[in-house]
Each structure stands twice: as structure tokens, then as C-alpha cells.
Length: 123
Image (cartoon, rainbow, N blue to C red):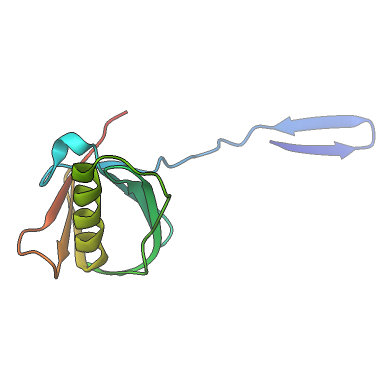
């Protein structure tokens, strides 16, 4: 909203605010029941792993991606969820390529042969 005053006259101009929603993707290629998510915004990745929230700075150039050290909150859970979370974050840390294909986000890593495949969550 812009408000300008000229002597006793006041005019109000409504400018539309265009807000781009940050996409959230759900991991479907491994452990889909764990509800692992990822979002990418302004050279940062973040999401929910099996137990904790995670985040890291990243650098994206074309289809190339490099991810700085991934940080997490410090919650704990059962051994299976801890194993899944450790595996996922170790794999994601080695990402080198990223692409979007329709509503799918595909991340290629050096840790495993198959890419991490995520599907956009529609709100």
C-alpha cells in the first residue's frame, strides 16, 4: 500500500502483492511412509526428515547443486527412525545434480545409484 499526501488531499494506491509460494516436496523413492520433505528457496534447502527438521545452505548452478553441512534439530525417536534419518541425510549430503520434471523434484547423489525422487505436495 502506498500512501501519499499533498496538502489536504490523501490518495491511497493499492499495489498487488505477488507472493510466490515455496514448494514442498515429499520423498517418494525411499521410505515414503516417513513423510520426509524438502524445500529449496534462495540458496537454502530445508525440510523434515524421519524425526528432525533439517536445513543447509546450498549452491545451485544450472542442474548442478552442492550442499553445505546439513544441520538438524535434536529430537530422538526409535532406532528405525534414527537409521532412516541418518541414511537419508547422508545420501542428500552428497547431492550433485537436481532437476524438476513436472511435479517431481529429482536429486542425483554420489552415495547411491538411484536418484532421490520427490513429489510436490499440493496445498
